[in-house]
Length: 415
Image (cartoon, rainbow, N blue to C red; front, side):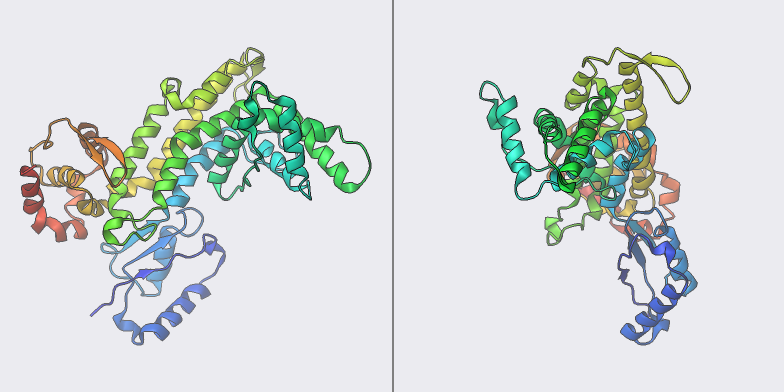
């Protein structure tokens, strides 16, 4: 009799470890369960699906005869890691990453954080309050209460979005702090370092495109990354509420994320209310200046350049989402049969080819799991575009559930 269990996640740099790792895993497994001939892993979860910890982990474990048959073996990626890739891939394609000598939005965020960190003994707070008094008008000081910019860590992409949101909100005071620090006089390595960083901050903030990119990142963080990231950190109350165990709701979450990014593509961001910071920034002084597109040498205004950049940004984010979450409409579709009843109804109807329609026509139902409205007509169209019914009916996990399909459909006939 085989013993099934879920293998623990391994570090996302697993690819640098040689075959010895898997041999040692086999040895450790044997120490735990005794007779390894009766033990098989039924699945594995990994950090991101990038690098060397995606399907390659399964392949290596299979070579050690540690896995059940391929058709039953499940591979899962950390949804938080894959969600962050929507921002990472979009940024790398349009803005670039930070680093010494770089002149872009990511480096600006790093520079402001570096300025904050090099000011010891409460100097950041002192300079913040000084700048607040200098720039606030008509009671605006209440909006500038002492703040610290969150650390923008390149391997934790949501922190980049968080830092961008901070800078958009406090741009005026951050600039004033930098200007005040740049004007410090005296000597000493710490002072020289601070004034040098402050000069860099001002130089970067003076570039309209860089500040426009910061607003693009901040709006994307607010409208997409932050709410979905926050949801994925929660737990399923029906099975104990342990953070992260949300597999049965991932298909419907994929639908919500897909719908959000789809509305932003192809210029859709121009009509989405939450993109107001980036959109308004396109009217800032200097955006009418003509520049040369480094991609093809064509000349255009900075405004037009940023509009094109936004289109590429959101398409890259959408493509990343499709790459990493389509598994929930493919090999992991069966999990949705345990979702909320309207989702289960839609999936079951499609798999059985029952033309029962939605229980309430084109109704919208409020999902308690997501605290969001789901349009059933749009959800059905999403399923039709994503799911290969013939292939699903050959999935061993779907086959095991077929006996309860009539029950699931019957339950919905009473709604």
